[in-house]
Length: 556
Image 1 (tube, rainbow, N blue to C red):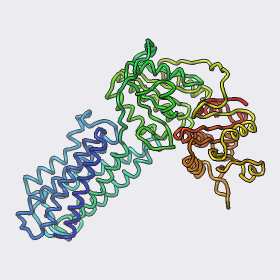
Image 2 (cartoon, one colour):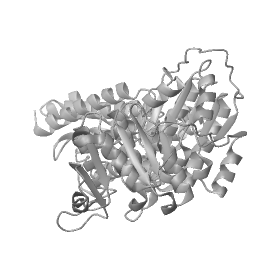
Image 3 (cartoon, rainbow, N blue to C red):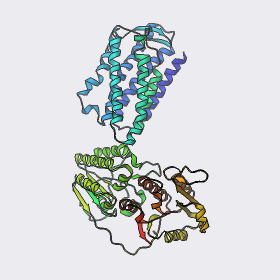
Image 4 (spheres, rainbow, N blue to C red):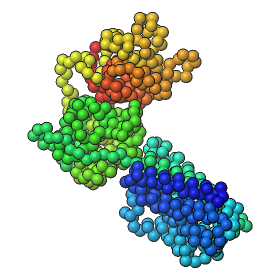
């Protein structure tokens, strides 16, 4: 037994454990089959090397079958790795492109056959620098060049996937995978594949177990990051004779200042067919208001981690793949994408339009119904014109009629107070008290204390980076400080003062994300959020998008 034998055995155990874990965790990804085949090739490679390294004193005749097993695993690695890359980059299984199968596994099949049936690639067993290795045969140089060509193509496909993807989130996640796999492949080529060709060594160096472990980790990371969310297909309980007004298989866009038209149509539809909802509103609010007791809701939020809490920047990543899988597994369903205007401000219009276009095409192909909802005032005219063109039907609702309602909600919720900031602050002081209130402001707390403000918890938001006890940057510390204070308060009352002043310290998308994060955190703790804004201090589309984030909007 040698140290390298222990390393090979450890690599075998670790690679197998990773494979079992990943296959159990994400059993239905497009890369599941090639990942399983790739780890099987790694296992053959590591098993053969481990046996040879753990029994260095055995005879050449006893070691040769294990050497051949090791090299069959090496041969299969080229094809399975290429298979993995093709599925990874295209989003389609290789079986849907049968003409590529011979090309993908051609080298693996030829080299594996030569390894098992002849001495042309593996001619025997010799003592290498780190233990017994294969003595290369006369056909080894040609086989090595072929083998390496397939690896070069594989790495090129992975790099091309990274460079061509326009989603910053996807590029961020793919970057580490491509780097690990590329570095491992280059090093393995230098010390294993070509080592006998440019040195006097009769065989490879024998560091493959280390490289294979690195490649297995890289592939495992990709499997974890490219997983789908598990979404059940259920229908709501029928609440009355309200047949759906939606055309099956059609894409419908709802343009309204409230969510009611889209969600009422969605609720009627999911009483007969399964549905999936995507929204920036806390799921509990949607369930209570629209009776969505069973329908799965994906919540766009950065305030928490959870099974169905997804970050908006994952739109072209987990979210799109989750919708695709849901429609594939459950034809004739209905999918609602709410808060389109929020996604536009956070991600950019082009990315959101591409996402909606793909969702509509997926729905058409599976006989499903795609819905989207947005506030028309929160988008520009060119954006609205392009969105209308993506849908088969556009339903526009007039502004709602305002009835006399109390300013504050009877329970948890968020209220945007427009107009007099002094009246808004007085309202906050009247309901918060000294133990529940959290104040977020752009003003120096010293100024507030001089006015006699009794709030104990104050988050001072500014540009950040100032010396001494300066303000927290809105896109860095401020959100963490505010949510940290909220977590220590039961049913908190948070007041966000003068939202228009935040525009002095950050662009509107960051301001919107910051405001929504506070709304989400307060909703998690079933508290109340009050916010004041002077509408004339912001652009009309910005004000409209802010209004849609709140449960109520009141003028003071």
